[in-house]
Image (cartoon, rainbow, N blue to C red; front, side, top):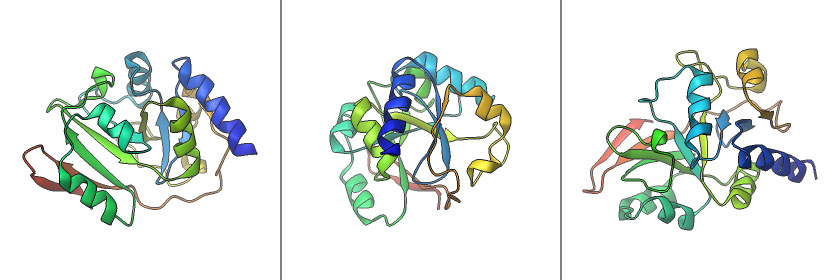
Length: 188
């Protein structure tokens, strides 16, 4: 039942505008409530990352996606259905998220998660969860918990106590889709 307790702990921190360090379906992530601009700003500050470099959001299903994007190109669902590994889609004109998450071209990267911790945390939040790799901007992405720098661990409000032994797979594939149906692979 450790997972349920970790979900409760993480949710409390997020609800109060805090940021968490947590395992995702790919690498360890730093996250917060994607609708809270102050919490989003804390992550940029911790990572020393320019706000022009956008971060992605995790979501747990169609309902949440339609809450953020009025229009979702048909090809998005085809890609999600066919993907065998975690895939991030960058879609146009998000709404109902913190403005400092949206990139300059008015797009937002999102990933649907099945990983139980993230999925259940999202169910409880009923909002998207920011996800960005747990490193200072420009440093390599840590593939396991023990590779995360002490500065990051100290800088978050809560460290989720699950999967500390897990070695991550590759970061997700990233595909950009525009509303006029252009498809561009950004990271394989």
